[in-house]
Image (tube, rainbow, N blue to C red; front, side, top):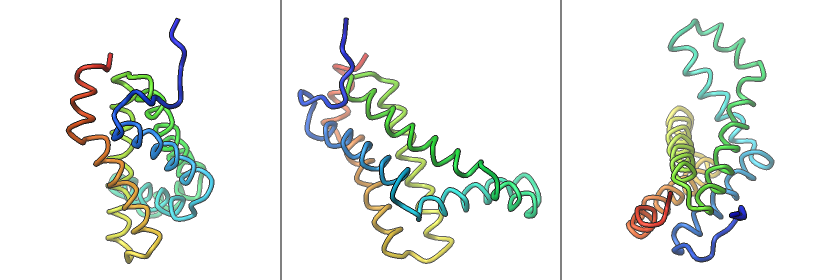
Length: 147
């Protein structure tokens, strides 16, 4: 019976660091970063306004939905990190999808407002996570070892 592990030191340094950064980003997202709450709200309202009126988007933005998007992104980062540490393909894909979404959302929000220090720092962590996940060493290890 395989034991689930949070970290896997036998993986290349790029994947090991990516897993640590996934956990760190999830903790910042869920507990310590007010910027991400506003980011989730702005992105949600922008997406809803494409399909509904601006008033409906603002009304839905005042509901629990933006918080649910933030919790879903944090859960995806933790789940993806856990799956990656246990050498599962679904974990790597979940982690990659969460990192891409977070990067695009941060860029979109930064472009709509002004790039402040907090947004720039969040973007720096998002891009670093993408680089670690898609590094050639990470990709070759994933091809050989992940199930």
